[in-house]
Length: 311
Image (cartoon, rainbow, N blue to C red):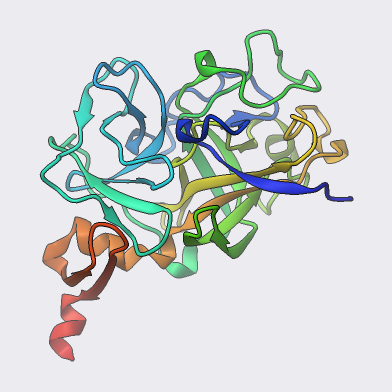
C-alpha cells in the first residue's frame, strides 16, 4: 500500500488550532463500549482533564496511586480531573511540584484528595508486546453516522466525547520526538489493522472492537494483561499520524483491509522505559530517589532500596 505524506497530531484540546481527529470503534457505535467491560481492565483509573464544575473534557489522564496522576506535557498540567461524568472532581495539589519525566512528554501531578484507588501496576519491560485494551475520553462518531457506514470521519465534536474502551495491539518501538523537541521512548499501534493478533478473532479485530485514538485521547491508557491475569499500564497516548492532504484519517467499514487509508500509526509512551522513575515518585518508601533541575527539565533517577543497600 502506498503511504501518503504524513505528519503527527497531538490529541488534546491544547492543540485545537490544528485539525485533529480522535478513541473510536471501527464496527460499533459510540455506546457499545462506553462502560466498564467487567473483565478486570483498570477502566476506573482513566480520568479526563476537566474544569472545576466537571463540564469540559480537555484530554485524558491515568491515576497511578498515592494521589499521583500521569498525563502528557503537551496537554498541560491538569487543574482538575474526573473519573466519571457527574462524579467527584479532584483538584491538583498546588503545593506539589509538577514533575516532568526527563525531557519526555510525560508529567506527574498530585491530587489534593486521594480518590481511594490502590496503586496501579506498571508493565515490566518483557511484557509489553501483544494485545492491549485502550481506554480514553476521546470524541466519537456523530449521531448521524451509523455503524458499518463508510466514509465516517473521526472526531465529530465535543458532544460525542465519552469514556470508552477498545482493542488494538503493540506494533513496534520507536523514539518519538515531538514538535517541541521533547523525546519520549514509545511504541506504535496501527489504526485499521487487518491482521488479527494470535488468539483474537478477525471479526473482533477488523470490525466490532478494534479502536484507535482520536481528539482528546492524549493521556489515555493502553492496558495489557499478563498470563497470570494481572493488568498492567503499558502505554500513554501521545500522538497520531495522519495524511497531510484530506481530512479523513481512516474510513470505517466492514472490510478495513480494503481501506486505502488504513495503516496510520498511533504513538504511545512506552512506560516500561519509565517504570522505575514513576515508581520512585508514587512509592518513595521503596526507593532512594534523586531529583535534579525540577520542575522544568528535571530528571528523576530511581534506585530500588534493596539494590542500593546491597551496593
